[in-house]
Length: 227
Image 1 (cartoon, rainbow, N blue to C red):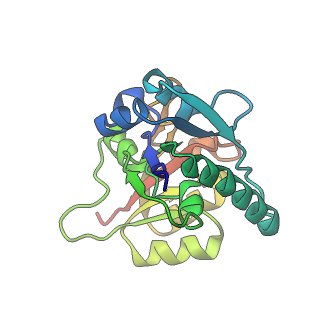
Image 2 (image 1 turned 30 degrees about the vertical axis):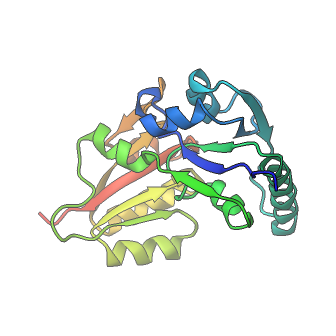
């Protein structure tokens, strides 16, 4: 029986080209195919990984739509394409920003891929990099913390009541409401946009951007002010 290819999920890091891991670089230089999410312009993940890639790059469409049935069809189609590559003996790597196991398209592929050897390569998350950039720890001692995408007011309110340290992802959805709830629950925080990129922005005055359109690649790190 012909040997099947191995599938890799590779975290490229938060956006700073210097924060890609040595292991990611090694694997990218050795695989037969690299898969990158399709983008109108070159994706950030591909831009970071490109200097280390020595093989064919296949871009796949993973649209951000709410139609679950349509998404499942697209994921299934993409997985079949990947399975064909692996069955042909091609070692194949899927690249993603941040870490593959945290809010990544990679996990949808992983859950549908059966009968193949898989290796997941962790990457530095956006919120860990953001904490370093603002010089504020996310948690200390025995203090628990929460990481969540902003979806609705009730979910945010619940988390702010239960935790003293939070990371709020995808805050562009309803930034004004998030800031209002943070203030109501005595939190102070920072808005980090496009962490590690050339156009990175750090903002410690959350009120300054009320009423503005917030970049999709933005997050807030906040801690309850108990002083």
